[in-house]
Image 1 (cartoon, helix red, strand yellow):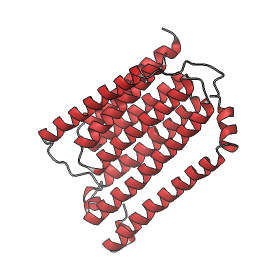
Image 2 (cartoon, each protein chain N blue to C red; image 1 turned 180 degrees about the vertical axis):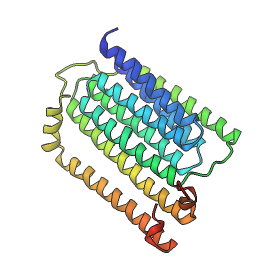
Image 3 (cartoon, rainbow over the protein chains, first blue to last red; image 1 turned 180 degrees about the horizontal axis):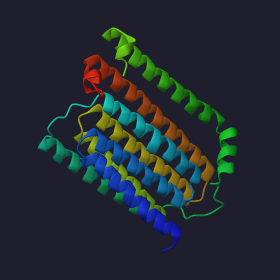
Length: 170
Length: 98
């Protein structure tokens, strides 16, 4: 096994273990930690297949920034703990297993095109694409993030006013 | 390393995210499950475009857009969660030191 294969195997294991913690872990903190763990694994898989830029982006946004915000929210307002229902858990396991089997069958049966041509995965290539062909998409993503942040602020402000003052904003 | 292995990992993440989405009843749990499914989509796009060798950079641009969309959705749901918690009064009750 070469270095990329080792990184891929270890990262895939981490990603799936983290996702299993999200699905099965008890408590918000465990689920958020599992999510961050899983995103580190996803970033490792991206690194192993050669997508360095994407791996850095996933580590910064999905593995660090988002879990940090979620953890702060869970500390400020812990979600109500409800006893798990067996029927709901059984339905979740059944749906998850059926989806996995269906997707793997589809993946195995699909005739994927063989690898060919030059791989354009260097950061300079991505930057060039983002600044030329995909500049509209880049601007739209920036606008989407700004609107989401403003929307979150507006929601928190509205809730604060309905409670009687800015001190109630978590 | 083949495309099939990477896609199987993405499929496992999607299945776990979907199962978690069905099984969890809190907003934070649903958000985490949704983000897992988004991550599986990002991984699938990156793997297909990179390992099939065609238009890799274009595929990475799509993956970057998906990362941005996943983050935006997370920020928005986080704001909604905190707003609903502030409305219920659980934010003050659950805050450290209260």
